[in-house]
Image (cartoon, rainbow, N blue to C red; front, side, top):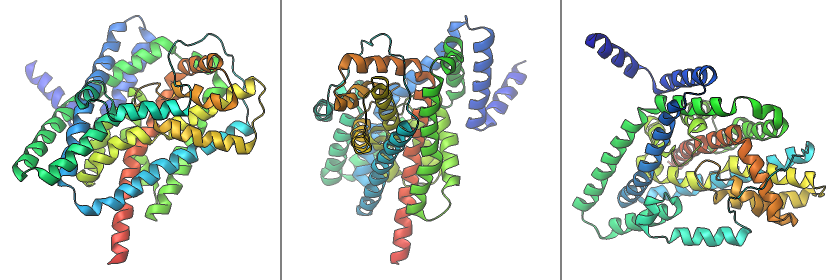
Length: 409
């Protein structure tokens, strides 16, 4: 019996992580349909996501500080490229959402008012972002405030590079390796976590959202798929001048699949770190660009904010011209860059975009409530788009930089 268990464990461990996740997905779906009352199964998903969220802030802090303390000067062009990719594709995603919403306007039933607080305007976003940036670094880690974590990690990393001895820099690097190893152990439990997350979604929601808000879900998901499979590959091709789809498929399969179920860009940071390592990318680069991407690379969030806001406008009979809609897309881009890296983070920025059209906060928050109803699909696809893009654009930026250096030589 003992030998059989050991043999089974070895066979399980020898499978690829993606295959094990797919097995967990299938088992979770079956259990959710056959025995939805067994809610104890969902604890597997809660524990897994909780573990990732707990370790991710520490991982980001030590990796960014360690990477910058050892960074070479030639990383500058890569960071400029990856930030350009993040912001450009987020803006393009918002424009796609504007065009689709104007071509296929949707009315939604606005019932009930959500009680969640939301920022009232763009200045609120900037004010909150500024306060989060200078938040106490230990408090930022404990509350998963990634803007604050990035800021202080960059400051400390540059300080280490300038003032610290090689022994101190090596000690920080060793600690980063220890935290990375802890993350690898947590990731090995992903199949069981996915099982619990899928069970929870299937047992609670089933397919009812498709009948109630089907058109809205189709429009949101359609925009996200178009950006993921058409817009982003075209942008990547422009930078690397080669077929982008092998990179796109790999990032969607490894990063996007996991993010679809965790519904958290922040929780998916360790997955993206491992993916970049598997692709042979420069750790000094991706250990900074991946956490940065989870904060400002928000294609899916820009789509959600834009589509939901224009749906509210159409429901209320507000005429929206194309130039005004483009302004909305830019506002959505800025707002999306401040969206939280946790499940449902983009929904609370809908009132900010609605304020452009003079829509009251009460009405806008009703749209937020609708967003939470369809969130089991919308937020899952949105996070998959956002998080897979972090790894995709990091790889593209490094390929672009190497191509540039090759031409120079």
